[in-house]
Amino acid sequence: MTTDRMPDVVALQQRLAAHGFIAERSFAAALLLTLDMRRPLLIEGEAGVGKTEVAKALARLLDTRLIRLQCYEGLDAHTALYEWNYPHQLLAIKLFEQDARPLADKEQDIFSERYLLKRPLLDAITTTPAPVLLIDEIDRTDEAFEAYLLELLSDFQLSIPELGVIRATEIPYVILTSNGTREISDALRRRCLYQYVDYPSFERELLIVQTHAPDVPEKLARQIVEFVQAVRQRDLRRKPGLAETLDWVAALLRLGVGALDSGDEDGVDRVMDSLAALVKTREDQAELTRPVVEKLVASC
Image 1 (cartoon, one colour):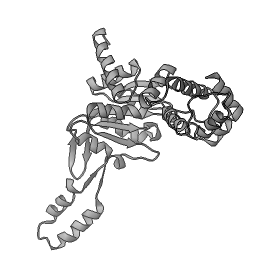
Image 2: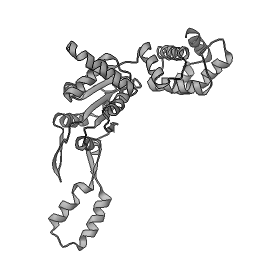
Image 3: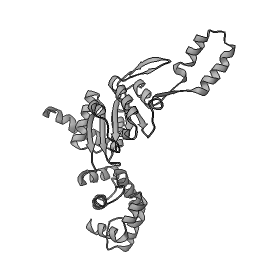
Image 4: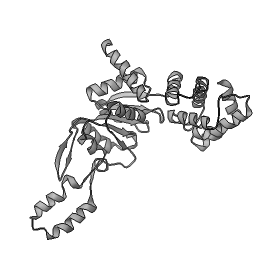
């Protein structure tokens, strides 16, 4: 990227921040290229680092729809594209019993767009203005679905046997996310721009807390981020992400915690009470015993 594009990157960072997403410069640069080149952006990283939030912020920034395809094991192309409204079609068939029109005309009417239920992929390529299409956790699907998706992202068109080829009205802004549970194919990677997102630095996480919870005193905000970052260094099954950090902020405020102080027994009790918002598995909660929490609080 040439230096004359840097002001655009900084401006995009500022606009994203205004919509609640704090982006590193490299992330903002990748998003800028995605917007300029209309290329899909593949975002990889651990769960909870804010991959999904960027699509939401981008949709708000562009003042357009966010269309989300939540991937899961067993998802097939048909389910992600469209379905026919069978109950309404059956009702129409009964009404057609007294219709004198030729059978071919009746079939054409039954398989018209009025009976078509758009699922996320079809919805995304037929929506104007161009929406943000979030394909969330693509690594949960299999190679067959990934291959179909690659074809769709190459041409932005699809074929429905009863209706023919449907081409994109406007090319959507596509964000794909992956938690890394399965290796994404080289073919899909080549089609996309790429960004890896790690857990945030202290400075970025502090800014995120201050953006989303502006009423939190700065000292407490710093202590919270220091505590969370120390918790992530422990051998946990599921490390807390940004969503958990913000949940914990809300929990601490709700419980009346004004500061993290290891010498305040009642305050430590409240911190222990709040851990349900920060660590979300039985094993991880067992790891954060009172002595561990006291030590972590003392280090903040």
